[in-house]
Length: 88
Ligand code: FES
Image (cartoon, rainbow, N blue to C red):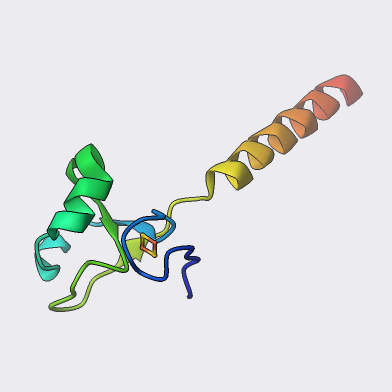
């Protein structure tokens, strides 16, 4: 999977944000200054920047859903639910 990017890996766009399982987080090098500055408190929630995190072993990451796509998905689900309620 290729992650989208606007900054070409310069830790400025946040488009490569991923979450890492807490038990596998030790397989990543500690965040550098740029990653720490950009993510702030998100680091404590398990987020890392894929363009910055140096991998030392095998790591499974999760890619968060794009916020715009998530909003559209929620609206579609609500519309479908309302339509089902109307039909019954
Ligand atoms: S690619 Fe832009 S922050 Fe990682």
